[in-house]
Image (cartoon, rainbow, N blue to C red; front, side):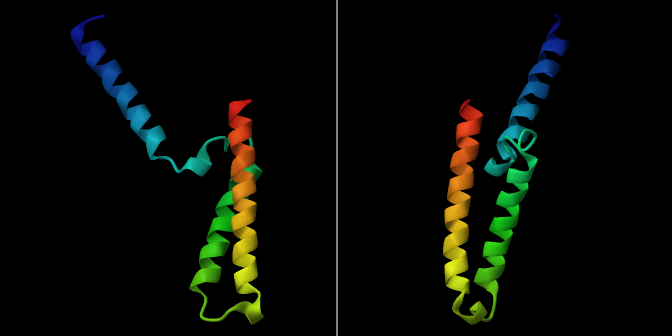
Length: 85
């Protein structure tokens, strides 16, 4: 392989690695478990919406935020397990 091809190959490899590292952690495994990945994203967005609201949803906002945190924790544990097996 000549010097130019080696540099091009190295540059493409580094670019691919940088692109993978730039992905949010929740995107890993998205191909194998797309609904779980979508649920993680939807729950995170709902949590932010609850936090940003100008009311507390009749006192249920705090409990909902805590439930979402628990769900996200469990989903991330499940995805970690799936990645390892």
